[in-house]
Length: 436
Image (cartoon, rainbow, N blue to C red):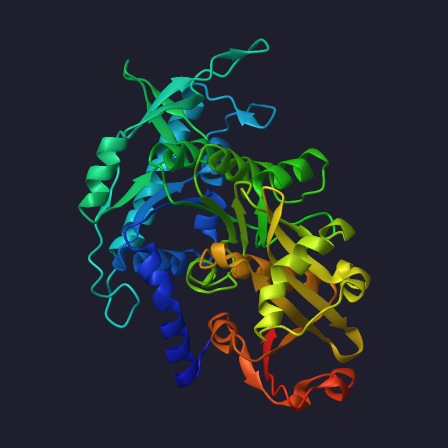
């Protein structure tokens, strides 16, 4: 993607708040052997180098399944699996060591690359790995001996943090070592999940061949709470691979604040997910203490109480109870302990391919905590579901907030015909639009 000079400057400026927010945070990045073999992987390495350069503490966890399969085939060893888990005998273990060592060397080499006129020029990144994962045998299960297939027993938190504090990138392979000197073949999903939990990482970022988490309707779920995702998985309503879903839900359930799923095939997916407002993949988080949902008729009184001060001050246009009851299905609310603390309405104009965002309000005691942003995100999701491509808003005193959310000033002519006829020229509301 080639950006015009002005677009490049605008993109860089808009990323600064995210650079400041991510500085000093710990991110665990998980990618399988398929990602390493994809032509886009060198671009991912460049983006990882950028994270390191802006002060993000980066832990990389790589897989090696296709590379192990190649070596098993070359040695004419019969690959044995039980419920998708590889049984690692002594011969297969040698293939695991060979494959994991080769992949680790490949990643280290790419992170060391610093040719002139390349994104890595002058980076001078240190990559550290070693016996940072202590493993235990998976053992015998249902009569099947998994031999040298293991599970993570412990993550060397002190050792990893020492490397991170020195500014190094930590690289973890899908192998672990026991106190008895044995080597175990581990799943990289297990390593990444347990590392993120043990390190109290701020994010787990999972690279997948999907753009994110998709439901059976082939809709990308941009933001989803863990309990809701687990329910969809239980119902068989998610198409993304199960190992990715397990890493996302397990890490968040154990206290990792945010887990992301992005594509390893899409150039710039990592940077777009972390440094732009809309992102590119899926974000999984724990259940909010405050519930965001569609409004019901029982919410009318609470909404009226919330918006009354804003109507009296002239910020919002006055709505009668009767009008609100008739339009309640257009409203979204945030509820805290039974009290409505924020709301907004979305009115669709499908014939004009646009929708109006209206009656945006947050209780004065709960402002400044991104509740408006949460509602806007839900509004945009609903607009996408309705195949709407533009949202517009009319406002008199909160223009700055809408500009901060990415809205752009527009003329009255941008409004749908029905809305133009109802425009109040005495109120002189400003018009702003936002692409969905």
